[in-house]
Length: 432
Image 1 (tube, rainbow, N blue to C red):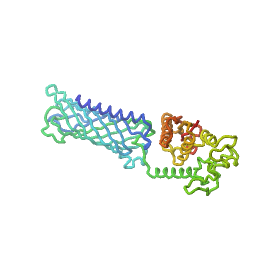
Image 2: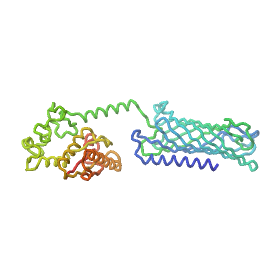
Image 3: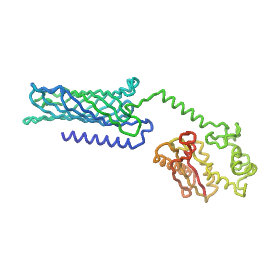
Image 4: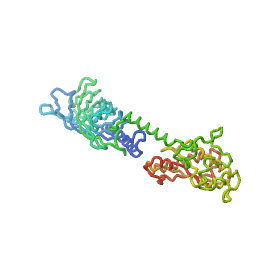
């Protein structure tokens, strides 16, 4: 008995450690529901066979109970580690006996409620099926015989459920236990004479499913609607198409374009790059926007590499000002650390500036939007800055000239605006 109790406690402990880790993590991003539960039940049993001649058990027999630690792999399938206890005693017309019965079973679980569409009848009704193998041990209390027995058990059952809250459900379980390698009768008074699957115990339990984790629901009740998922994906694709549209055809998506008035049919060279006819490093179609911020159009159009421009500063001074005031950024999609393809031009701008100014240094600062926990967003912003830092080093910039950090969430835009959040998922630069 000590061996089976020890084994069960170790198994339950390992499962509990797993559920604790799962609860501490952000709810699985690909599922959005909890997977762990503790199932507590108690009830009655009917020990059916084998019994000695003249030995009869109470019908029903009290008491039996069990505890299960369950993990659902997805909405339809999972595993359960079950530990149970039964007490078998004689009725008034029987030889006296009192048997203590222990069991542990590892089972597979099927969420039949989802498979059968039971949730469509009522969203609070559920049904689980379970079956598995384990070990059983019982010990009689007869002072002379002191019988005890180890057996292999095969357990199968059905578990109707009724959801009370998102964290708790009622259940009724009906299970059958078959025994192999049973030499002694369940009353502990004689030998059976056979070792096949001749033992049989029927249990009925009532109890609670207690769901663990931070999600709004558990796999038992989470409904995967394929049509709804397709609609969501189509809506996301439509939204992405709008976000990445380029109405003025200047190669800059609308949501990042600071001057979205450039006429369509923008001139490009044979490599597809926007034309820079005066070779001043600024695409011709951006000069009108820069004109309003820094100089007259004549000043910009007269720039040549190495020349002085408006207010006596060099072209490098203008580029430095553009960089430091946030016109050159690397942008990221939601929860991603991979720079968006259109941001590679910004990285190239920094590489070019650093190569043209060998004494210059740069600080890279990463940001995220406000979705997610502050801890997650802080880490994400640091990883974004580190990715751009690595790209610059791989592009030939010495690491001693670069530093990087993450500032976490940028709360300067409305959290409810998906378009505005795109602008703060970025890495910015400060050059000296």
